[in-house]
Length: 272
Ligand SMILES: NC(=O)c1ccc[n+]([C@@H]2O[C@H](COP(=O)([O-])OP(=O)(O)OC[C@H]3O[C@@H](n4cnc5c(N)ncnc54)[C@H](OP(=O)(O)O)[C@@H]3O)[C@@H](O)[C@H]2O)c1
Image 1 (cartoon, rainbow, N blue to C red):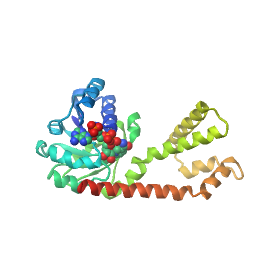
Image 2 (tube, helix red, strand yellow):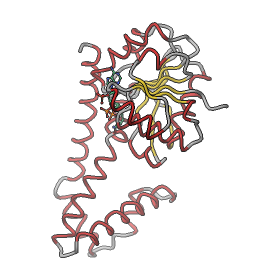
Image 3 (cartoon, rainbow, N blue to C red):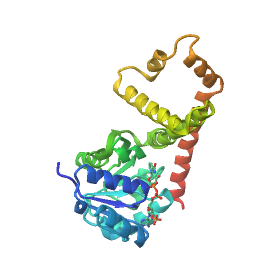
Image 4 (cartoon, rainbow, N blue to C red):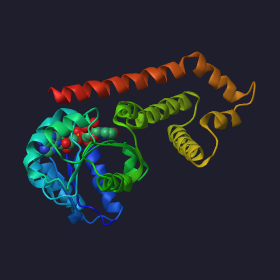
């Protein structure tokens, strides 16, 4: 399949990550168009990336094979009303906004192929994880185009829409859990006497290595953890503190809270 042309409506942090990722994956600047609200940001982005960057949502959406909506959930209704008259049924609209339901998108853009998707920021280093759910008018070809574009910066998985709030809470929010762990571990390392630069290096490489090991290994996280935990040893002492301190319950609460927030944001996007 040739590179489909792509419009990114909302060139904020995530929009820019996708734009740069598509360039790395072989899309030409002219295969892409970015739309942002502020003219100054548009000029900077265009200068920096070479991608045409404008401030008109309608003009940006016109004629592009894939139209990605990457604005905050509250701004989605504005985007939908601005692009409504500018689309044709051969274009697929991919919405990345947390919590905004396919039914809302389809009500605003009747008969338009729609994909709702939830990416994450490791897309910035081509290791993103994006879950996508097709709407009722999306054909196999539309879905394949969405996989191609979103998969340019990492892995994709197709899931039913009712699971996307959970996906938001797990992989969408997930990088923040890992970064918080990194922060806490670095602070603890410094309290144990390690110099700051050494603490950072030890923690960054440990998280990177453990992630890669988990990814490459056929073993589960549970088994890999078992391999570094001997009875009465140092890891066992640390695991004891984390388990007793309610680590699992805290993670569960955090994920539940993020999923609930995703549902709330979706409702607000419907009734702003
Ligand atoms: N960041 C993440 O980790 C992540 C992960 C998964 C999903 N998401 C979803 O991705 C979406 C974007 O997130 P983000 O972090 O990239 O937000 P962001 O940095 O705030 O970017 C949103 C962009 O949309 C632009 N925008 C808003 N209204 C517009 C309009 N009417 N016309 C043109 N541009 C408009 C904003 O322009 P101005 O700056 O000029 O206001 C801004 O550049 C959100 O819905 C979020 O739920 C984010």
